[in-house]
Image (cartoon, rainbow, N blue to C red; front, side):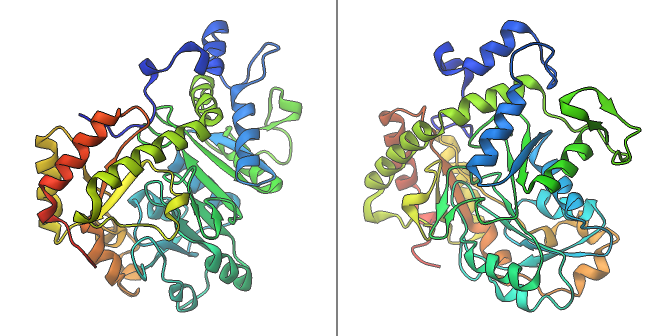
Length: 387
């Protein structure tokens, strides 16, 4: 494909751009607890993203979904609690809520790439947390949610799995949250195949650390202690050292990556001109530049647009075809009665199947960008001019 849906290509990188990765390969220590003088890549990654998200601490974990679940657990969210979640989001966000026994309550869009904050005021019951989800390199404004969470006295969680490097008029994705969670899955801005990270206050992150490390307490980073009164029963959800090294190398190169992506996106938009309407965030200059979004005329047009571009070797995808409320797995769950009593997220349900994403990474040459633009223009009759 001209524009593969991945933003890190190991064969395209030189050894000079991967110092952490080659250091780990050099000593062969793939476990996060390194038994040598070399600093753990996990430790470096955690320190880097704690600073990046403006938090006291961070902990690397197995993936982004695990990060959301552990963040909720560490924040004290549990059975019967209600958590407001962006209706327009990947199903894993609501699943993370359900996995701790809590009830996901959808926050509708008020327009594309924003959240209808009236859902917070009209939640119809006590709220334990609010989770806002950023979309394909476009940051969703979180300032109003921050104010409402402060008024309610509940934590704001930002799912930055698709939003690393993006900023809204309210600032960088993840900075306003009490807890920021990101992912290093293959299609994410920083990719190590799988992986994730949770950033927040020091006490909360210490709890996440134990929940991801078999519940153990480690004194000074040493061997696990399960006799310490702070130890809990938990799972092994650690990130490997090799994954952390790949993520850390990309984190160090993020500014350059974003700059190259933004150049490519600017070229794409220039080639499209006024013939195609792009779905913009509220702060296009702050977008990561990894994806360009469009809105199809109908859900069927969205499907046909993707098929037509694929025939021209160009990737286009519907971002999220359904809200979590629409999936059978939730209708069949023990939450079905609770979910059926909630307000239906009309705008997200109507727009979700129509929102399209065309990725263009830093590796796509100028000629490739031109081919992407040509394919979009060839099939622009499937795209809406307004919504």
